[in-house]
Image 1: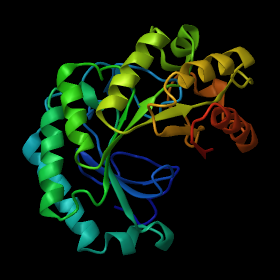
Image 2: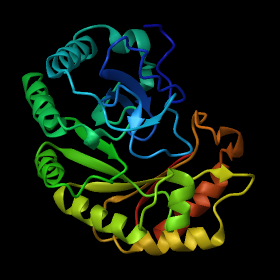
Image 3: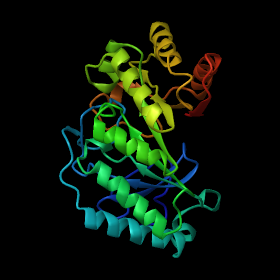
Image 4: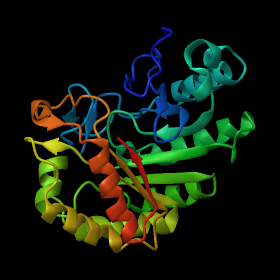
Length: 281
């Protein structure tokens, strides 16, 4: 590992030299996040046009080597807590271990071992006396949340100081198709979000970008606000963020980062319908 890799603009999953575990400085979490990448084959069931995963493909992850995952997590936690990792690789202001995050290079819940991995993380954090002291976050597109085994895992996650960040990037079927490259009924997605929030504390996460020189249209914004207003009493709030790192998808030349002022104005609209909103341009 090199001394300059931990920045908010570089989330290279390979930088740690490990298969499943990678560290990042998370602008949304506010410090060091230990990522768990279950999708080591860069496969996902969505293809968001702003995604920074190289050579992203459609599909599901290969079988998880549970023993290797546990070994990597234990060794990395040891280095952070007892070693010199923070001193060597993290600026002084960011030297806070904030969470264990299921994110990585695809949809984490598509791994059939996902429920088992939750149990593994619980066991490891208990051994390090961290259980309940840091968050365990699932960053998800929400597409598989209503599967019984996933809902059971989310109920368990809730008991472990867990939290879900659930993707909602558009309020229309056309917008979802354009941004996430999937055919999805917004109302079906909101029903999954409600189930998710009932099982575990949940934030909406929304990425907004400029596409072909234009920000989201007035109609798109109205549809988005109407959609998320349906769950304002269910969720904890909204993480609204922009394009911090370049997309690695074919649409990359068509994308631009929205000005912070635009995102702040959007946040005001979201707050006006009764949702706490955090902005990360």
